[in-house]
Length: 141
Image (tube, rainbow, N blue to C red; front, side, top):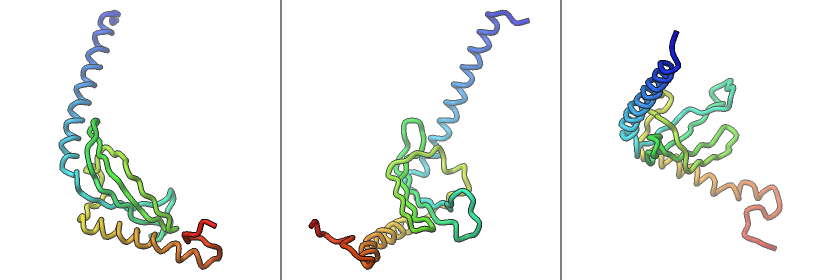
């Protein structure tokens, strides 16, 4: 039967091993993540239960930095199947390298998709002003 001192010593050993393991994993993650800073990716996104390929859309990601914890800092944008546009300016993710779901894309392609969505957003006022009222105009009266 273990004594109180033995138990305390084992707990301390386990805590030290966990700290060491965390430090090793963080160092490995930092090394992997350093390779993707500045790169662009896309991810096939959907809501919870997609039934057909039309239920999917692309989420675009550009990795901009690594935070103090070693996680990737990125910004992203997407336009879902209902034409809703989402822009997330500052988000973190532990590691893209471990996932086959993220497809690396060129910066040129990333920016072309961004410009395409911006152009579409700039036409919304024309699209919706046809329903009446002064939606999309500069009138304040």
